[in-house]
Length: 497
Image (tube, rainbow, N blue to C red; front, side):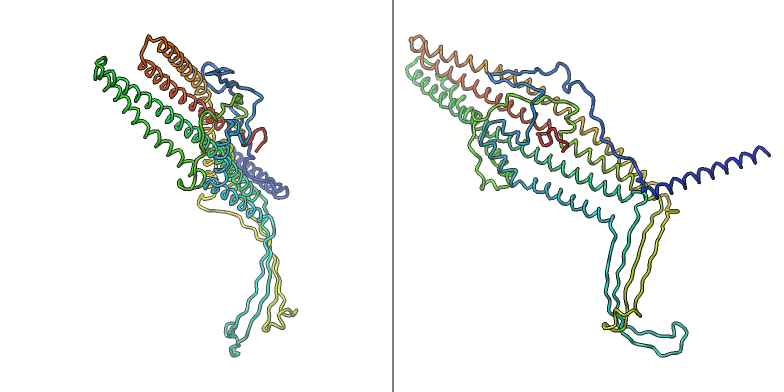
């Protein structure tokens, strides 16, 4: 019995001490203008010696006489597309950046977010309102127990009211912090839109040039096979060749002719896409004439560093800003659990005539301080805070996924560039071999040891090798674009953004 009472006394004393401690903390926060919720810290960059898996990508990748070298000193500029040395590419990107609707939408979204942030900052200023009223009323003294007859009169009022909500727990400051972070997210979204648009334009221009070069090479092959058909048909007429040889060559020619419309369709689609990216109708925009010969392969590439990648990619920065928004909203939900204080003051004049409206007899004023404390809301405020914490956990998971996807993209692109160099090197050797074979056949033809048909066959093989080489060149250029985009496209560089 005595032990039980003693324990109860200790429990009561402990509860009182905790209550006094909480009250003291509340008073300390009230006088020091504390801010509830966690202070946001940007997630640390992943620690990795290199990004790609397995053997590291070579520092220098040489293929077909064009080498690409990775350098720690190389940086990406905002106009990274100029490193391809093509005036046509530069013009196409400029047209898109000026008139692209998606980019205009992202710019408007950023302006909207900035205006929302400025609107949210108004809560830290006194809210002042003025009002003027004019009415005609009938008043019955019976309402106050008087037997006097009713009175009809005019009433004119002029008043002003000032209110100010004390941000004791920092809920409003956290709300403004969330709005600022949301503005940062929109700013990074705009940078991502710039990067995506410029990369799409450059990639499409490379494809447009490659399709044009392939069409030209294929038509040359068709002409050569046509000559083979003519020569073989003459041999058949002379009785020195079978008619099946004529049919075989005609089949090859028809097969080649069937590939031209498909290439022309792809080139037309690329041109239409360029028009759409530039904010124009297909009939209103003419793609500039460009060949792969006019596009230079960038020789020096920036090396991907994990600690810099998370600061350079706009999608990672956007996910980080969204995480900041979620963190600030935890503070808002936490502050809602505590009492709020609002100061108000008002004053004005009222009279039966406009001429006497400002007389001292009709003057009135008031001043008040309102304290509202949440006592019972059925768990709403508590679970709103829990929901804010869950939203933060979700935003953190999204951020981690964006980072992983970014590193995956960079790793894929680095390995693709390495494989492109190997493929193009083989294509270049095949092209050189076919050109040498053609040279030897031409010498044998001049010596009279082979017929003209052998020259046509060797030349067709050279054109086939050239088409494969053109495709390899285009792929290497496009994977270089992909690397620039994967590294952030220079929209931030060494700055903090």
